[in-house]
Image (cartoon, rainbow, N blue to C red):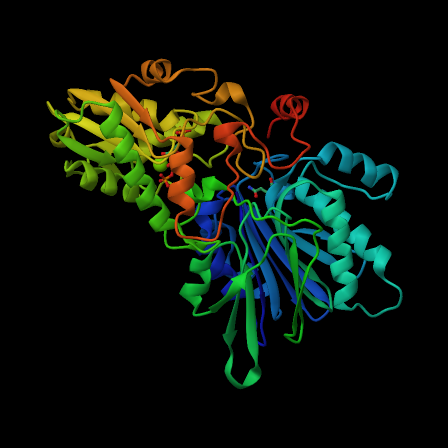
Length: 485
Ligand SMILES: O=P(O)(O)OC[C@H]1O[C@H](OP(=O)(O)OP(=O)(O)O)[C@H](O)[C@@H]1O
Ligand SMILES: NC(=O)CC[C@H](N)C(=O)O
Ligand SMILES: [Mg+2]
């Protein structure tokens, strides 16, 4: 799950793009990049690691221009630990295009073949994003008649992209000398929001980004979410055009954004992430009360950070004291989005420490937002026991993750998932917990969409039902054999 941002302004944009990326850091820690357009000239800097370590003053100074875009990467395809596969990606024709992408394409085998044999395009990496860019460039090239480029041609090219590409994609591209293009896949799986801010006499500034908190923090007003299948084109002089480019758009946003990925202070598809997490806690409390003996539980504890809102509600609903027994080292990033199991496992211990006075002789109910590989939960149960806990009940505000996620979250292999092919008591044994309780799928869905206009959610990692047709058992086996390296 990556974070993306694009800005068109009457003023230089390098600092604004940087600030936005800092706010999106929770969406990707593998690498980051910024590109700007200074008239017809692009400038770009990308590097491995997080935003604060990737950009030096001299890099920022070189990023000239009043249009720009940026990316923080949480790799799902290709090579995670590689500067060349960091985003943005660039092609020199037509015009010069630079693109950033949040999502994951599911027909890369066909695309690689077509790009080589039919379009005669060279893709120099294993990144799906480079393929997306090359499909866009091919389709844009086929629309151009003269030197000028009008928004209709851009929108027709995006319609063609929707026809050729499958999977999830929220993308932003700069077309040199012309403007900024943003588009979202026909299911709106990944988020994308449009904002506007007045820059006084010099005109308006436009921003397109993954999460609303970026708009809020920089004083942009929310114009609207980019609709599923829609494309927005903002010219270098600030005129905005939009068009629905998909034949059958349907909003099916990713449930995992609300469970874990997005920041709680964002509003996504009209749903406050924080409130969705509170409601997940409410529903979980009802299930806990139904299945587990809660009479002897002394305290409810969250696993910092993402489960705090849900845990607070569980405690309140069950009328049990809420305590924070795990102290979090704020200098360690999110462990789930780190590449490689060894690094993830080591980081849980570096990140969380149990304070024994909160555990000694007590029956603890632990709440996490999700259990995926079980990396965090296994360590947590061990730590709670070592700190003297009596009974440990582990609960998850999301249902068991039993199937791969192929739309922008790196969990491609079934065997890695602790709940795959295991019944709940077996998982409890694996974790070493006395009881284990998960949210029900229907409750998760209701909790997330309650009070909004969203009626469908992308929940494949919980249900095994994939919204795009190409995700067949054969494809899932191929993904498993060709994992991220
Ligand atoms: O079962 P696992 O494979 O361990 O994955 C699930 C855990 O990973 C995430 O935490 P993370 O530390 O990434 O981020 P957070 O600080 O936002 O909770 C999530 O909140 C769970 O705690
Ligand atoms: N999580 C994402 O959105 C990843 C984008 C793209 N698939 C990559 O691996 O770079
Ligand atoms: Mg966590």
